[in-house]
Amino acid sequence: MTKAEIQFVRSLADKRVRDEERLFVAEGDKLIGEILQSGLRVRSLYAVEGHFEGRAECVTAKEMERLTQLKTASTSLAVVEQPRHKKPFAASAERLSIALDGVQNPGNLGTIIRLADWFGVEDIYCSEDTADCFNPKVVQATMGAILRVRVHYLPLAEFLRRSAESGVAVYGTMLDGEDIYGAELRQSGLIVMGNEGRGVSAACAESFTHRLLIPAYPPERQGSESLNVAMATGIVCAEFRRRARG
Image (cartoon, rainbow, N blue to C red):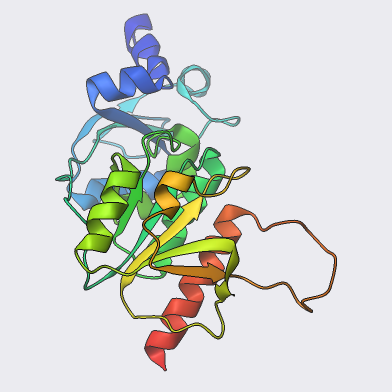
């Protein structure tokens, strides 16, 4: 492969280039296999001998090490066109969705997308300062869930306001919230999770119709100050789905 091809793939580690080209990089046979079946268009596919033969440009292990955006090179790498989703006016009042306000850590975002896929949440609405879902670390952390969950970036405070005005239940996780295990939960609505350090911004919190707390056990125990945002998202989604089954 040419030096220009290697430089182009490497350039996609930069969000500005990804946004301009509307592309992202995926690595690994399992993930790429899912992408090939998903309907997304694969612009380029590179693989070492014995992988995706007849579909991929064969490269050496050394070339793959120059292409990879991970710590350890995979046996295959694809350059894929980003899916295009229509920007919604407000969240659906009929389904459960997630909103993320300033989640910065790519690993957390990738895990939340994977959790959404597990719990049947089809849409995640992100503030514009939330980590990029097409960051290579996020893509890999989703384990293929990025292909099934729609991730939208928009002015989140305004979106939450419109959603609440449209009758959508907007649930915020707050330290002064009601114990989630005793609170009344609808089967649909919008779950808002905040930044790893700051939590949910005041502008977004203004639109909450319900404030929830994940309580420590026992309540008087002096333990960790807070939960990891991805872990908290999993707990909240699990409780919503548990109620739906009951």
